[in-house]
Length: 89
Image (cartoon, rainbow, N blue to C red; front, side, top):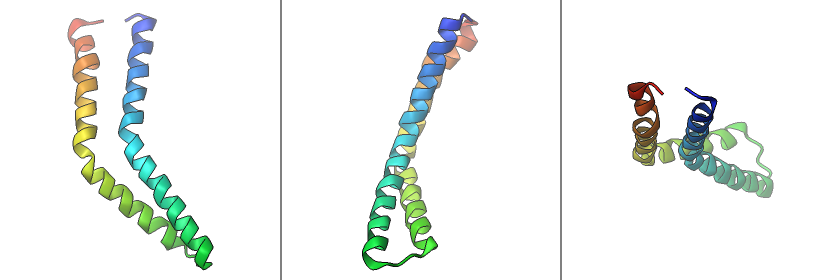
C-alpha cells in the first residue's frame, strides 16, 4: 500500500467519523445551550439538570440516526476497506 492510498483511506475514514458523530454532537450542543440559558434565567445551578437532558437527547438522536450511521459505515467499508483487503492494495 502506497502512502497516497493510506492517506486517502485515512482521510475518508475520518470524514465518515465526522458524518457519524455530527448529529449527536449537534444535539448535545443545542441541548447544552438551551439548558445553560434556562439555568442563567432561573439561577438554578443543578449539575444533573445539565447532564440528564443532554444524555437523553443524545440517546434519542442516536436511536433515530442508527440507520444513517450504519449505512455510512457500510458504504465506507464496502467502498474502500474491503477492496483494499481483497485486492491487496
